[in-house]
Length: 385
Image (tube, rainbow, N blue to C red):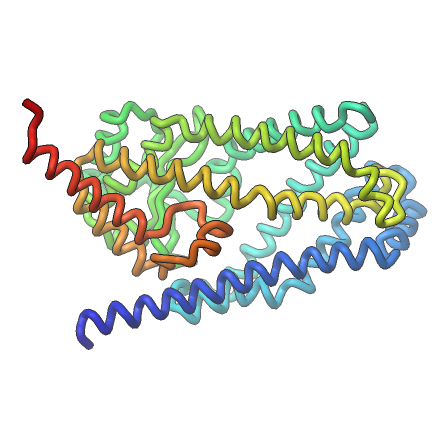
C-alpha cells in the first residue's frame, strides 16, 4: 500500500475511534444525569432514604450507606457502556492487550477507590453543613482544596502502584540523559521509573507526578521501547516545563478559585432548586442525587474552561521543551509517533476540541513546532545588526 493511502487509512481509523469514544463519553454523561433526575424526582430517593434512616438512625452512617447503594446500582446499569468504552473498543482498535480478568480486577480497584474518595468528600460536605449553615460553602471549599492536594501527593506512592508495577529504569544511558535534562532545567526529581504500561495498553505515555518528596518521572515501557533517546528527552522536557512554568501552582490556584465560586453559587441557589424536587434541605439523605446533579452541571459548564486553560499551558510547555532541548525535529517525530500509537484525533472539529481536549490536537502541536523552526531559521538568516 502506498504511503499516502496508508496515512489516509490510519487517519480514517483514528477518526472512527475518536468518534466512538466521544459518543460513548456523551452517552455515559447523559445516562448518569437521567438516572439521577429520575431517581430524585420519582420519589425513589426518598423511599430509599427513609428505609435507611429507619435502619440506621445515625445520619453520618446513613449517608455512606445510601451512596454505596446508588453508586452500585448506577455502576451495574452503566456496565455495558463502561465495558465497551474501556475494554472492547480498545481491543477492537488494537490499543490494548489486557485480559478480561485483569480488566475486572482494575474495575474493582477503581470502584473501591472512587467509593472511598467520594464517601470521605460527602462526609466532609455534610459535616460542614451541620457545623455552619451560613459558611459551609467556605469550609467545604477549603477541605476540597486540601483533599485534592493530599491525593496529588500520595497518588504516586499509594494509588498508581495498585494498577501498575514500578521498577527503576534499566537503561543507564537513558536514565542519565533524563536526570541531566532535569538538572539543566532545574527540576528536582526523586528518580526515574519505568511502569509496565504494555500489560494493559499499547498507547504511549510519560508523566512527571507527585509533589515535594513524591515527585518522580514515570516512563511507560510502550514509550521507552519505541522512541529514541532524543524523542524521549523532548517529551520529558515538556513535563519538566510544566514545573518550570509553575503550571501546577497556577492550576491549583485556578481550581481553588473555581471550587470556591462553585460552592458559593451552590450555597446561594440550592434553596430554590431544592423546591423543584420537593426537598427541604441539602442535609436530607434523600437529597444526595440532587447534590450530584449540581456537581455534574458545574462540570459540564466548567470543563471546557479548564480545558482551554490547560491547552494554553500545554502549548507553552511544548514551546519550552523545544527551546530547552533544541530537538525540534525530534519533537515533531515524537508527536507523529504518538499520533499513530494512540490513534489520536489529529485535527478534531472545533466543538469537539472545545469540549474534550485538555491538550492541543497533535496537528496543532506539530504546526507550532514547524512555525518555531521556521522562525529560528529566519532569525539566523537575518541577524540583528
